[in-house]
Image 1 (spheres, rainbow, N blue to C red):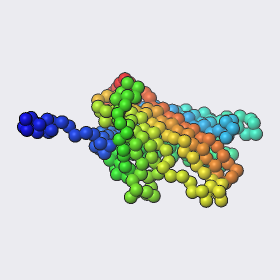
Image 2 (image 1 turned 120 degrees about the vertical axis):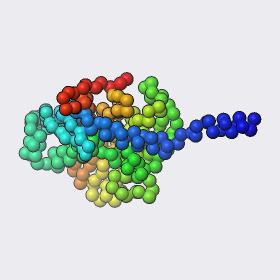
Image 3 (image 1 turned 45 degrees about the vertical axis):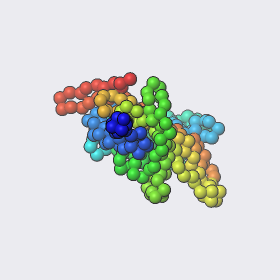
Image 4 (image 1 turned 90 degrees about the vertical axis):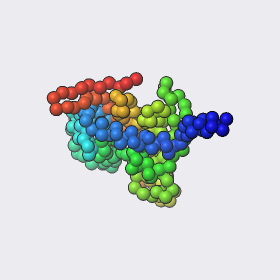
Length: 273
């Protein structure tokens, strides 16, 4: 009976913890980034700025061909449409540089925000610090397992994360959120983040400045064994600057048309459902 109990004890796998789950995710992410660097794909980006009453202020839509590499991505814009509202009149423009023709705070803010959120110098164009999945980024965060559940037919772990106390204030450690992790493959399915810190009250009251992050999220799809791509990314925030400027800014991005680029051929990939 003692031997049987010992055999049962050693045969029973240790329960998963948040750290062990995310450790496997980190290893998979590191491998997936290298695999994704051999693919070319299309990317659509929509940025919309609304007044606080919901009326449109500015909108820009871009299409890109994205070529990842071992060190980052290269984007080639293939289409662009823009418009803004000036004293009730809609003004359209087809050149991204035209946004600077009428220089104003909105054009600068929206352009910089789009660059920061969807043109980051990573293999996916999405900031690693916002979605801390790789081993390097995970060192700055602490994780908590909230259980196992079914998400659209897939068994997933629900993991909460926030900046580690000993890393607070460091660059990139302002995000908190949750990740749904595929239970069998240890790949991210859905990651949602929000700002872990708030603008100090003194800044808001004395300078009339505030940024409220309403949330950013990214979804992933499986394309081949061990190959998962971020396919959608979006978010929205409210921004107020110096009392007189207040807007709601929304950004959405979609990746599609994945092709494996070889010397002599290209192979199309569709998501594995």
